[in-house]
Image 1 (cartoon, rainbow, N blue to C red):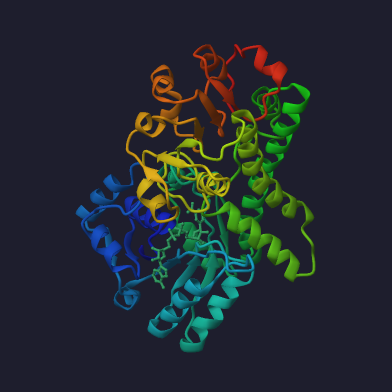
Image 2: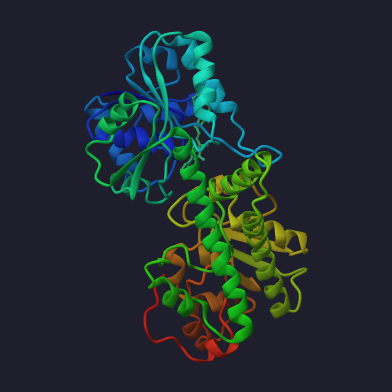
Length: 443
Ligand SMILES: NC(=O)c1ccc[n+]([C@@H]2O[C@H](COP(=O)([O-])OP(=O)(O)OC[C@H]3O[C@@H](n4cnc5c(N)ncnc54)[C@H](O)[C@@H]3O)[C@@H](O)[C@H]2O)c1
């Protein structure tokens, strides 16, 4: 099929490239000229496992193209995905200005029947809004469907091929069938719903996952007080299939380009529809507090952090991505700066360039041992696997004081304490810390 994808961020570029890979003829459109020029040379503007090779392969067989001009490709398009950003506005609402701009552009240039699929995360009612904008200009038949995206940055290409589900919200059988044809080669359950349900499934899913994270962080905070170990508790809980073992890792809390804004947006949508979503408000408050609690803990253990030198390991909002949007690591840096830390040296294997645009008065270094040199404490802010494999004996030699705040619970506290470190982790009560965990605990 002939497909256009408008917006080539983490969602649009992965979707466009993978759709080409399963045999469609795809043109990706973006207003960012530099980005388009880079992609035309088969270079990915984002770090995502396997993506660049797949781009290259599909450009070579002429199934993947890039342009800044939607008007040039619309005439040949059967299905158009909207995958532009929907950031939070000042009140926490989803800012739909980019979606609206694309809808106007489609309307002005459309001359034949197409299916427009909203892949951006948008409030219920957005498909209707897109439809009415296009209708202002074009009076022929077309349909706007909802096709929310559930990929996880870091494993986005894998997730395209192995989705838990593909959700399609359509008004007509024809619209639904067109979308089912697009995703035909993809295994995984296809769920066809009303457009409104589909739009809601996305927000409800993200809100639920964020709730799980805040829930486990609250349990972790209680574990510390009662002598339990959150990793053991989460493992024991997660074996219950009604609960599931995902998103039960205690730490600094959620961040990223989706959860924070989507949770705010759903809370806002509820409010404007006359319903106070009390649970979600608490989820947000718990998440904000979690970073503060951990920094306060470090402050107590160090006997104050004013004037201290701190190394921050990890800047991305999660491992295996270069995305730093609403990253907990950046919040940590701001909290440290607010408390008068003298020097922050930061390292991340992929996200340093993006972080440099977001936080200031930080020394970014390309080696973790360099970052830790002379430091009073190391903070693990992102769960990159490499951090658990570092030579911590060497790290201790270069540090001024042997303190670690493991904000992602990825280090072996017992091995580190044998090396002479004081390791602050999340949700490990004093009693739990005295007995090394012998079984492998994976959550
Ligand atoms: N990033 C994720 O993990 C993820 C997962 C699921 C859903 N989503 C949702 O998908 C949407 C896109 O997210 P993202 O992270 O890919 O965004 P992004 O910010 O990385 O990319 C958006 C792209 O859209 C382009 N754009 C803006 N206006 C345009 C226009 N008028 N015409 C053409 N291009 C335009 C921008 O230049 C940018 O390249 C959001 O609604 C987001 O909530 C994101």
